[in-house]
Amino acid sequence: MDFPTITEHEELIKELFNNAGADFSIEAHGDHVSINNFVGLPVHDIESSANTEQDVHINDSSGQFLAILCATSVAEKPYAINELSIPQLISFIFDVTNEQFGTSKNHTFKSHYLLVNKNFIDQYKNEYLESSALWGGFTHEIKRGKYKKQNKDITLPNQIFIPSLRHKADLAKAISASSGFDRFLKLYHQLELLFDVIFVSKIRSLPKENIEGFSTVIKDYQRKELDILKNILKDYTSNPSAILNIMKNCPPYIDVMDSVFQDNSKDGNPNAPDKSTTKWINFLSFLQGSDHTSSKAKELGLVQNPKDDQLEAYILQTAAYWIYRIRCSIAHNKIGEFIFNDSHEEFVVEIGERLIKEVIQQIFSNSQLKAILAH
Image (cartoon, rainbow, N blue to C red; front, side, top):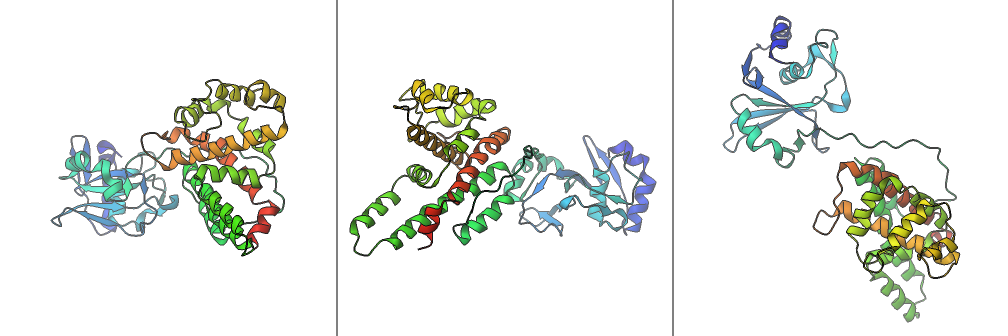
């Protein structure tokens, strides 16, 4: 509530504070209102490792008390107003609207609050507010709403298996991920874990006298990450058409795809702009068209011969490149990488996540891989 609204309800507010064992005072300081010498600033997120059952005092380097972090928006639970602590009561006055006040015995807070001493508020806003996530583990920035996809019927895959206990644990982490970006990285971990698991399993399965076999497996393991990923898709995916069907959903996201895959192109791009300026454009035309045959792919210069196996190889190589480049753009904030912002979450969920989930499901349903891992 603002100053005039608070003063309008001042007698009832005083009663609340008296019942809690405290006096009540209010002052106006230009743009700020202080209650019992504290100015309330909304806190929109607190790091997950913080104990939100306790208030946290904030002091300067000399130990002088300056503010209280009051976690009041935990799981959006309603609080009984007559059971609120003094810091929670102060936060309540800043949080409640004029229309809400006095209409209920309970209150659900819209945010947490940092209660800042009125004499420190200007310095806090000028020197500390923007960096609170670093030194305090909380932020005043309003969280952007997470992208919500449309629910669709789910088709169970055939005979799917989980390769290791670590895969199982990381899949659980993917479900609890805070965003589509974080979830994609945790799903990518499913593929990264396979690099080592497959390597060890292949070594174990070789006869001790097979020196050439050892050499081949080690050479494969020492390849670049994208090359290893391409090999895994080539060896253990079984339905390139299903992967292509996901790629065909690209039209709404062509601008961001141009930026991620082409403007920031890297080695291993099957549609590298330095080799052909038209191949990428032709591939987008192929995806958006109605003819997805190998003959059409040959006509557009995507493959050399109109054979299904060439088109399938091209689709799998492109899928591996897309997955790898999305992963790099999320994980690496540096020059030479496309840097996603919140507005790109829809693309990551609708194209990236669907693509990597399809690939993982096909790999984890592969009987040949299951046999290799059984050794």
